[in-house]
Length: 340
Image 1 (tube, helix red, strand yellow):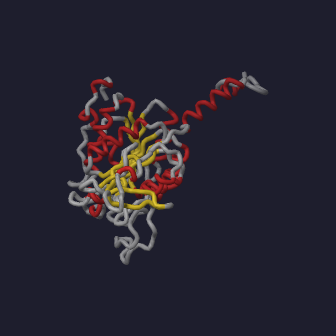
Image 2 (tube, rainbow, N blue to C red; image 1 turned 120 degrees about the vertical axis):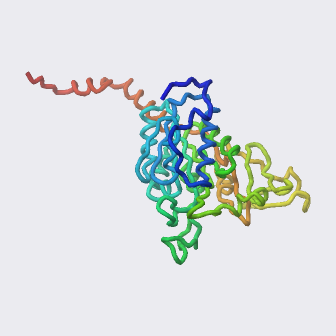
């Protein structure tokens, strides 16, 4: 990899020489483009990036990035990414994973990397299906969906990615749509700048085994009325006519229409992504159509100590107060015999 200084980096510089082998029309193509755009805006040399993946269609991602990368095994991307970041905190580490890879076999690793707040960026492709293994239901599949492993409809309650992240003490959670490259690019830039674990859920379409799964909210003709793009410090207003909004009615969010029953913009909730109390952010992350619009954008972004910084600080503190500073000191301490 030829070294390129930060002020020379363009999206093209992040494209590898490998043929992209996703299906035509797969949402992964748009995610790849958005990530390459975002990285070019960060002003960081390519040598400082590492992309880590597990198993799944999305996990081919490192091959298509002209950066360092590691294609791991099923469900272990969080563990590998954690080790990479702790071993070399100067790297910008990105974990690419799917709803099956992260939340089924990799669920334990996933919640603990979030809990520890290791400074890595996780992009979770959520197409609500196992695509690479040909169409089995996943931990995010809607209850009742008919698949190859649930021919009469699954009876399981699905995970909500945002609920899981916030419940695991997550400090950064955002959601985007694969086809909205501009929104995705902005979110990836914000995720990269956040110090700690960032999780971005991408509502991604699998054209072969779950085509149109998100179409009821992401379809071109309906998305304005069925999605809410959140921006910190701005009122939560949405709709084709920008005439709908959210208010807090007791302990619940409620959709209202501006101009009805005396409702004006001053009554609409203002989004606070930096609020440490996750109550409203939790409700935003869990909003579902048709009762609510689906929330997109950065839902939660709060500061917190990172695992790798705390580990380094602890090591330095112990070194300062200990007679043993390194491995040689340890091996030559206590009762030592010299063998001739």
